[in-house]
Each structure stands twice: as C-alpha cells, then as structure tokens.
Image (cartoon, rainbow, N blue to C red; front, top):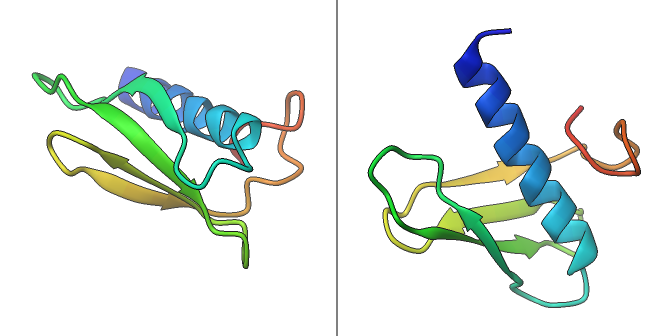
Length: 81
C-alpha cells in the first residue's frame, strides 16, 4: 500500500477510535491533527445517532468527510473496513 494510503487509513482509524470512545458526546474534541500539509487544525467529530455515520471536520482548513460502515471492523471494534 502506498505511503499516502497508509497515512489516510491511520487517520481514519484514529477518527473512528475517537468517535467510539466519545459516542455520547454530541461533538467530541479529538485532539487529532488535520492530515493536510501545513494545516495546524484539529478534527471535530460527530456521530449521527440515526445511522451511525461519523462526520469529521478540520476546524482550521475546513477539510471534512464522512465515515460509514465502520461497525464490526477489525481490531478492538474500531478501524476501517
């Protein structure tokens, strides 16, 4: 797997891990640094209770995404499919 792919997989795994630990908090502050080069932002996450989607967004550059189908993934209940 290329380096960029491994880094993105690790980033998404950190988000899933943080989301599952702070599931009851409506918008947990993760302390996870944005993966964009030259961005000092941190990632905010929100778990949608209706469908379990994890939404994440950098507070500085605005990069954002959605993670779905993360339940029952490898590891200790967290990771990426």
